[in-house]
Image (cartoon, rainbow, N blue to C red; front, side):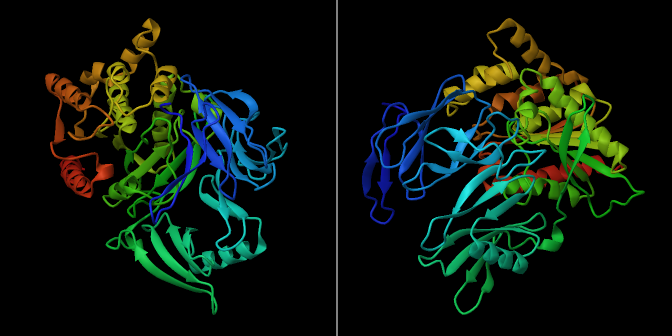
Length: 490
């Protein structure tokens, strides 16, 4: 039964496996209650739709939960009470944006009013359980910034104290001892790398820094971003993150780099969490303002925001262009010193923008970008699932359909590369498997044929920078040289 899992309990000390549930049918993903009993399941179809199943308390039977849902409809339990049929879940059923709702699972009833919601973005949540004896005590959730809500007064007071001792950060417990008297805190901030603290509850509350994820980077070295938004030409509110360098002043617009996120079905999040979050800081340290646009197609801002880009990539590109015009109009950016930089799908947007508005940009950067959409979809990476491939066909285009094929060609910058007027930095690790190396090679060939300046960094022995620190160091050294060649005349 390939792809149809049973559920096992694993002893992480001995490695012993014990089966606790045989799959009742076609369930591909399980969720447990607070005691670890499988209670909820999903089965996924090729078109992205899915069905949900629920196991009522104290029974072995599985029953359908609210019927089949489309790929944009979302329901995921956050907590299911042990021995009961109540809990809370994140859902966007009957509304545009995800919120946190109370649920009566057996009857399929969802509360009419949200426990947590936000007018401009989705709310995604995870359960927080007691750090010692006890059960469900709260939720952590992501709005524009990550937050926590505690239903238990003791835990609410504890985290208020921790936040006072570690200010201007999102502090969450990632480990604790059996009694809950010693906690390990992961502290995420927009102004410093992740830090780890030990909190001791016995004999008073003691908070001690025990580790830094990047000890060579001090908090004074980072600038951090701020959230803002602008109205697109069609009236839609578009979220942005803006990082301003120390050289910026109200009467001193600075060079701007636009950094569209990868995905496309992804989003930029608050805080320094992984290596890509240092990219804005890299540019800001060199005097650039950095604009990250939550373009149409981004996740996290509701169904309509995401769906309005399906087979309509023009809208996605226009959001990025209009974001640049917003930054210029606000006085943040110097209109004569604009660049664009992205990885994966962000690299696609970067090069596409340079073909659509060639006079706007003084340089572009692409890291393992996609430039021929038709070829990419026809040869999706081997690790992609059938559902992922179908998503691309449904949301971007199906190369076997004549109308879609024409759009894929129109939207592929490889066919308009001769329109580019500014230098392009092209990076591709030969060992990367997310995007085929031929995509970057074809772009460079097209640029060379048109006599256009470019710098092609082909790392024969490197994987994607996400997986290799040495690859990241090599990449940013080369990128620094490229930027110096551009900005020395400024």
